[in-house]
Amino acid sequence: MPDLAGLTVAVLGGTGPQGRGLVRRWAAAGISVVVGSRAAERAVETAAELAAATGGEVRGMANAEAAAAGDVVLLAVPYEGHADLVRAMAAALAGKIVVDCVNPLGFDKQGPFALAVAGGSAAQEAAALLPDSTVVAAFHHVSAALLDDSSVGAVDCDVLVLGDDREATDLVRSMADVVPGMRGVYGGRLRNAHQVEAFTANLIAINRRYQAHAGLRVTDI
Ligand SMILES: NC(=O)c1ccc[n+]([C@@H]2O[C@H](COP(=O)([O-])OP(=O)(O)OC[C@H]3O[C@@H](n4cnc5c(N)ncnc54)[C@H](OP(=O)(O)O)[C@@H]3O)[C@@H](O)[C@H]2O)c1
Image 1: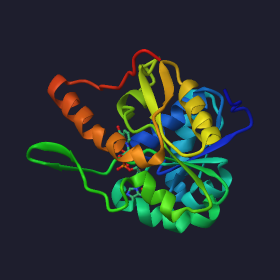
Image 2 (image 1 turned 180 degrees about the horizontal axis):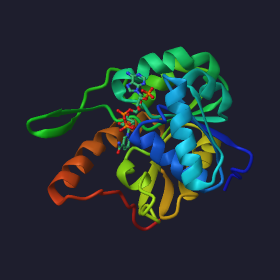
Image 3 (image 1 turned 60 degrees about the horizontal axis):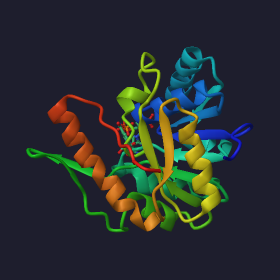
Image 4 (image 1 turned 180 degrees about the vertical axis):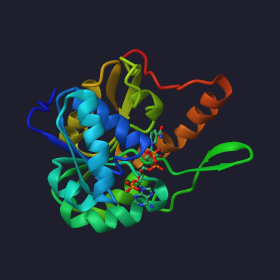
């Protein structure tokens, strides 16, 4: 598996539950992490909190600086803000691996549902806007509530990792493997990201019915 030593991972939108949770786990695993935010002071505050909680190296800065600082950059913002953020960061993200965990979902009286996405999936839309980056889709099904809970030792789930570049998907799989309980599993080419993003609606429905933080496990591999 690829060696993550010396790697800096930046998380744009790292002040939200999903970004915070992954920052917490990567910092605890000894990876150097940067929290990005639209407001640098929010990023600095979150970074200080997570550095103190994990003993890891966590810095906070505005999204543009974070994108420039990361070797690998995770997009952890709502789908509503995703395309605008990606467009604005395109130059800073050139030549980098960009990990997209964004789930385009809607909610109505019947609960969660997958949105129709013009570009196929959020990850494909990012790839179309970032021709000079390598986009990988991953971490869609991991519960932020578990990730960001310091009393949860192992986050018991598989992480589907999709992309068109073997080296990039291997690296991102290893970013899942460093979290206790978690395993990165190759899940196909980026064109298959839609159903992975959409399946999160099913997981949220499961969570609501069973009062759980359900995850996914792939058997027989
Ligand atoms: N929550 C989960 O359990 C979970 C699990 C898997 C995947 N995801 C996906 O991960 C992403 C983040 O989830 P979350 O629950 O952490 O979301 P969130 O709290 O709604 O947003 C995360 C951060 O994004 C920034 N943000 C909000 N609106 C924005 C906009 N219009 N443009 C740019 N930045 C904006 C905010 O940071 P600043 O205000 O500091 O900039 C916010 O703290 C979502 O796409 C979600 O589908 C979530």
